[in-house]
Length: 515
Image 1: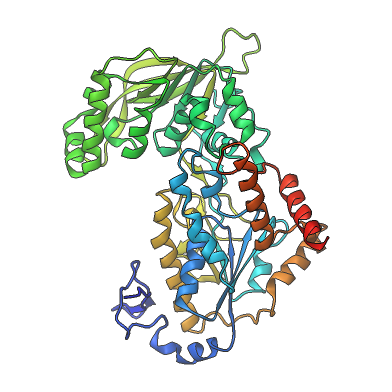
Image 2: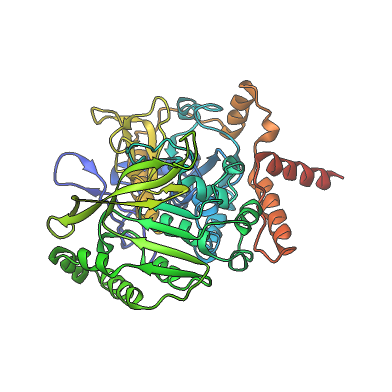
């Protein structure tokens, strides 16, 4: 039976949506009972929605909008010429199975009710308030393009960089093509123990043979082939039971071809507090990880050319300059507080024990969370770094709705979860849109027949050539060319890694079509 979103009236006077999905019988309709006239009109008049950002948050929002209402027309806008967000530029190149979600997104973009326009920047090329005048609803889903900081002395030293930058670099994101990680360093410290941290460590310790058949950017593959990195230290302030990486990620780093995986038995023992053992009993995956780490800690090393150290109960205290270099502007080590765990299960905190430890580092990757960037004029929760919202509905400080604007994905809930976490998040946002439309709250504008043409005009009015904007057909040409380029070297694709290259490929394809 097809799942549909169902309006549920709460017992209070206020009408709202449940956070979940209603797997409903036919009598459960996409719109509320008060929306009969609006539903009838919808069959004749397109309901136009702009979705800003084409990562998982944006695509899943578009998908469920299309499922809920045959009159919906969705325009997808992205700052890059290419879609898919972190699926393209964030998922590790040696995880092709995760990237297969693009097949689902391509089906969405190929729907005749969907249009894509890439290389258009919200906040500079087009303002949100301008989109509000062109669409019945605007959904912001542009994700998190910044990162959180440690807040410790020395963080501004050279070669202290974000894991986000390193990930974008090896994945060929155009904005990070010229990023220069210090691969001359023998020791790299990664602070944080989520999947991103493990991805970075894995890429740094894999052999070139292991990486050469992936879609890793060629500039990264060439740089890594000359890497002098010998030890990678992935450090967390709490114990192994509290680490945020998944079992799949952990297993992978225990099976590296030419890198020993090093875990200290004493740190595992210190992390097995009574509260931690209770947490492990509650979460099967945590219990399995504890057993795998214990086996690894007890196993002999193989004497491989590199080592990946997984360290626990160390909180960064200061980042220290390299004493061997006279100017003192580059990182040389990280000083950590040795910590102990205090508190109840699922709420333990790391408390300094009074001891410290220094780990040498010629490069430090900060992997303590991504962070969204505020668009001027949009209500903002500065503490959480998300758009202020109620179930995806953007709201002012007083709780009133902000003119038909909605939010989905990391920009809505913060940078957490996996790709699939965006599914219930998008459904909740779509539910709010459906409710508002059914209640007649989205009649403030009469969109033009082709709002994307109006967007093109706005871009042109600000001095940019509209020919540089990328349609879905243009992206398909880019995609085909990347796959063809990759096949020549045994890779699934060879990405274009600059906006200029991407636009040149579009121009070349169009010239061939008209020749």
